[in-house]
Length: 180
Image (cartoon, rainbow, N blue to C red; front, side, top):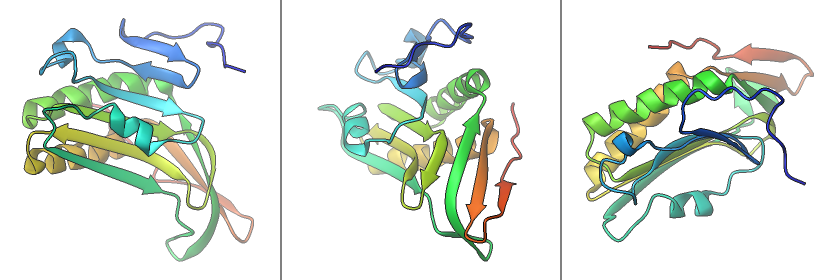
């Protein structure tokens, strides 16, 4: 059964849509620097991420390099055992800030396409929490763009992480974000 849009969905851009998998920012024509085969987008998802399917969205015949980052839920943080994570996000601001990050990355690095999907909800150890992939003609641009995108996503987007520890306690961590 598909999920319907919230009663009053907030559309931050004419290019943001609400899909069965959550809010999605689609590339604008201005962002399609290398033509219609190079969309850049950010998505929040409350379902498991499929790296193989996501990868297909950024590769084309002109791709010489693909760099991907997969952020996994680990079993420890700062000396404490972790049993689960829970992510919450403010989707409208995430979409707006992600659009800025992609424009910045495209200005800095000549890549073909990029994708970033971040999970929300409760995740268990080993689950994929965030996926970023960047394709380009050459590896240097792909590595630099991928690093830039994940670093900026982690630093600037209003995505909050609550850790549940093996002793039963919980704590919100890494909850400081700077929006530019």
